[in-house]
Image (cartoon, rainbow, N blue to C red):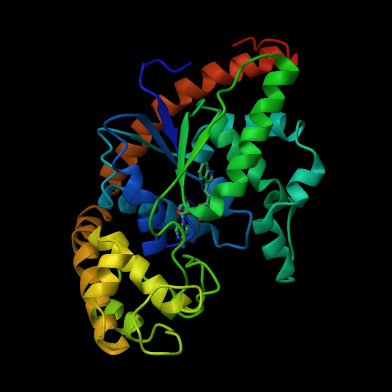
Amino acid sequence: MSDSPRKTVLTAAQPTGILTIGNYLGAIKHWAKLVDEYECLFPLVDMHAITVPYVPAELRQRTRSLVAQYIACGLDPEKCNLFIQSHVTGHAELAWVLGCLTPLGELQRMTQFKDKTAKGSPINSGLFFYPVLMAADILLYNADLVPVGEDQKQHLELARNVAERFNSNYSETFKIPEPKIAATAARVLSLQDPAKKMSKSDENQGATILLNDSPDVIDKKISRAVTDSGSEVKAGSDKPGVTNLLSIMCGFSGRSIEELQSEFFGVGYGDFKKRVAEVVIEGLRPIREKFESVNDDKAYLDGVLKEGEEVAQKKAYKILSKVHRKVGFVERFR
Ligand code: TYM
């Protein structure tokens, strides 16, 4: 289906704030390793970002900043396509068609939607439709592989279902995308409430470590991270805070939980946290430096996004024309 014989990877993040180490360890770090082997498309999903309350000027600034963060995390624009979702109108167009194939009940079962509605704040229908737009992001490029953190698993399942349904209603069109979930740190938790995932939109600043946090700030946030009863540095369901810190350390150091547990045998929480902070600070240093060097270069960032858009647009047009024909729309006149 694609122009090149390489398989296609598509995955995305929302420009809803500076990325956290959860986004990095659970997702973006792994995307950077795929760019040599796969045709990679990384849209910045600004249309998803308007499903929750937001400030327009901030969204624009965050979208440009996200591309700088992607580059800082190692997504080399020479090797992958970085573009803005709303620049390729096919995302919205395909979402409509796929929405007409998605039973209401499937969307009502989405846990992320249920969690957000449970908070009691006003909900718009865009938030309800969110997983269909996400399916369109993936299917518009016939992606083979979708590397994501654990929290996106259910959305991926919906994308697979809708692709299968389209293929069975209208004949084989879409590949069925495979999720790829990180082996470690697939769900980094809040430093203040390890029952919740770490999220870039968390209002409690102590709960997250952002990619551009200074060493001092990282040190403070980790020293104040919630730990568990007892004093042993050991992973387990009774120690979610310590387990989270161990898994963060695994993500940055590449070492296993077992290795780290033996290194910290007999060491108290205070010293353990100091060591975790050092590893995180060192791991983020090159990212923060690269981010600072590209974030203000608007001409460069816009150039990257323009090139990415051109590639994405061509690919999207091909599949969308096929979809329109299959569902019975009259061919466009131009
Ligand atoms: P978003 O912006 O919430 O997150 C981007 C990526 O980071 C992962 N992630 C985490 N991984 C581990 N621990 C965490 N605490 C953590 N928080 C976030 C996410 O799993 C994701 O891989 N719905 C998506 C965006 C999206 C998308 C798509 C993804 C839109 N269209 C198409 C894949 C394919 C989202 O909100 O990601």
